[in-house]
Structures are given as structure tokens and as C-alpha cells.
Length: 226
Image (cartoon, rainbow, N blue to C red):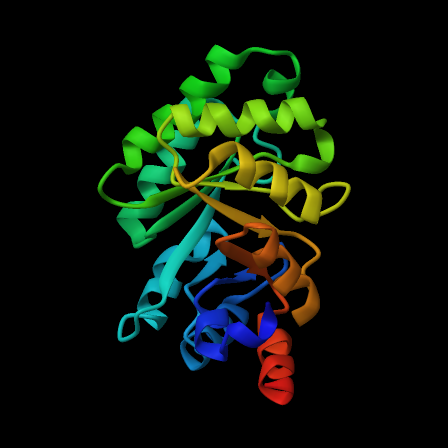
């Protein structure tokens, strides 16, 4: 698989991620400069830095992505909608929202779908929506159901993980998610993707976007190995 993906194609999968709570403006500027240098798809940052990142990226094609209801997914729907709306106003083009995991496990499927749909509707025509389902907390049936609800709610992607829970992306989960959503929406693998081999495995499993804070080292590894 790897030899068929050149470095430009590889970079186009990447949401260059910086979500640690202690990041400062200098870190965001560095993240944005790296994203421009390697032509990553986006930078994924916390909401308070959206307008700053938008300014740093104003002369580039790199998108600003931010997280909503992060990392637990337990804020109310109204708060998630407000967060998403503010993020778009500040320059976000992609929204990664965490669904309500407890509600999903309790089989409150109508609530979960409405939660996702409300955010999707607030972003319609303005920003892509990726739904984080936190696969490490779910069994296969719950992963499938979460994916089905995301599709029904008109999300653009399903995403494996926040990177702040028990574990990150697993190949088997990506395969299951891709089998469930088919070609209808994208699949983002995130959490624990720290090297080229792991990234390639996730793409081969069906991921159409990769979230990682190790983007630069992965690209250097790619360039070195060609």
C-alpha cells in the first residue's frame, strides 16, 4: 500500500493535531507553519485558538478544524450547537464533535441522533462535521449503531477517538466503521497514530482522514523512505 501513496497524497489525509490543554499561541503558530510546509488537510486545535489559527493560515489552503463537546461528549446539544456556530464564525471549516457516549450505551438513540443532527444543521454549507464515537468505550454493535446514527444525521465523517480516553484508533474498528458507512461518508482514524506504518495501516483499513500530532515525524519518515 505505502509505495502507491506519495508524500503529497499522504499529507492530504492529515489533520495536524494540537489539543493538549497547555498549548500556547506560539505552539499554534508552529503547528500552522508545519501544516503549510507539508500541505496537510487541516490543523485541529481547541476552539479558543480558531481565530488565531485562521489568521496564521490566511494565505494557505490548510483548513482550520476544531473540537466540540470535547473530550467527553456530555455537554448539552444546545451548548454543542453554540460551540460549533462560534467556531465557524471564528473561521473553522471542519468540526469534530463528540457524541454523547453514555446516551448511546443506554440506547437513547433518538437523543444521540438529534444531538448530532443539530450540530450538522448548524454547520450545513459552512463546515464539515466529523462525529467522534470513542470506539475504545464501545463494543462492535455500539460502534455500528453510532456510525448508522451519524449517517442518518447527515454527518460528513465518523471518527474513532478523541485521543484522551483509554486508547486510540484500532485497525479493526476502522474496518468495521468503513464497512458500516460504505462510501456515504468518510472515516477518520485518530489517537495513537505515531508512525508511518500505523498511518498506512489505517488508510488501508479504510480511513480517509488521519488525526495525529506526529504528522511531521511521519512525513519525515515518508520522505526518508520514499
